[in-house]
Image (cartoon, rainbow, N blue to C red; front, side, top):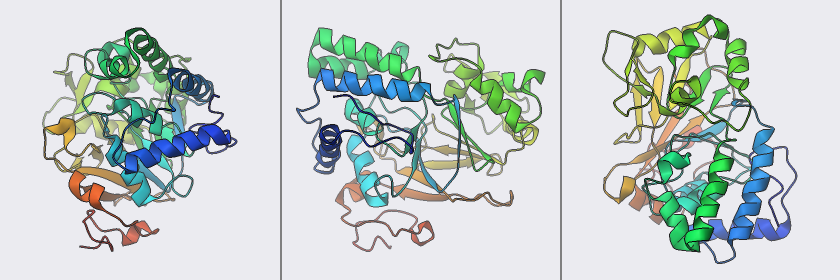
Length: 351
């Protein structure tokens, strides 16, 4: 049976049988196992069909209120994802916003993207949620290896169709702009106007599914990068798509649209979190031991439930290394003010 609820907190509960299946998926991750045999092609396709209908009702730009925990790139790190949710608190006890790139490079892309379906989480699109990209990495190969050539390619099509319905950005507490990639010079155009409400309205104008080109603001929200140096606002992106934006572009965007901070993902960060442009731009990366090659730490970010005064960044960063995270057998305190700076292998989680 298909799921009957996904990212919106107001939806009704899914059928017990499906809820049990996804609970077992979570528990399999806690035991460092992979996809349970119950997850057939038919079940996954049904879940995606229902997710697509729910996502169709969501705007391209979500408007959210904290408290909320944000994740950067996950790239198939399923075991780390479910352990983090267990340590931080399962939905609906805690709300989550994922900034994209659930698939490719890591070992368990399918499990990772499926775990991001349940209720009380909000899911943005990354540049890897596009078959033009993931067919050249390992997500489609993973589907074919799991389900066979024909079924795997069909399922790849279903995922690609669903990804085209994902939101591409969010505004949190009316002051934080969140997306996977970054900013666009298109936002300087007069049609976006000098107000946050008009920015959101214009981003919501394109109808779903979103099939973007290289030269539009949707592509920039998924692909653009922050550059710490540079005197001009925009330069061509070495990735071959979109732009890199500098401090001047970021500050102009925030001032123009009455925002205080930009939070993004998309770029590898060795310690999980990087503050640029006098702290106004935050790059978040949540895939520890990225691609099984780098000894990097990951990070998540907690945003409180009320807007700040605009002078001090309101978020709280929690860093982790993969080994310590998977060995952790405790839960974090409910109040983020009591969180340690990094997860350590101690029952108290206090270093």
